[in-house]
Image (tube, rainbow, N blue to C red; front, side, top):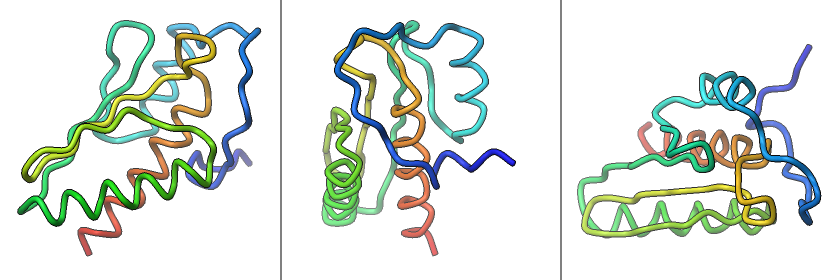
Length: 114
């Protein structure tokens, strides 16, 4: 049985590998709710909150996850909203790490909704 994305760990990527192709991107994108493909090289999602403080708290949790995984998204914070874009910079495209991190971010967001 294949382990869910959120239960996997990111692996260091130093480059030298090809980014995911369209078929692999489409398959992985279907596993993470609410995320969109930007071009063929990035995924993104916007998260909404009741105020700035909740949005900031979420940014801090995402930062902790990113540090643990060693894979860091671009995070944009504004009042009640957090936008996250990610891709694997070393290959200028998408890798499994991007989808693993997105799944972990989704888990953190859902935990906040409880």
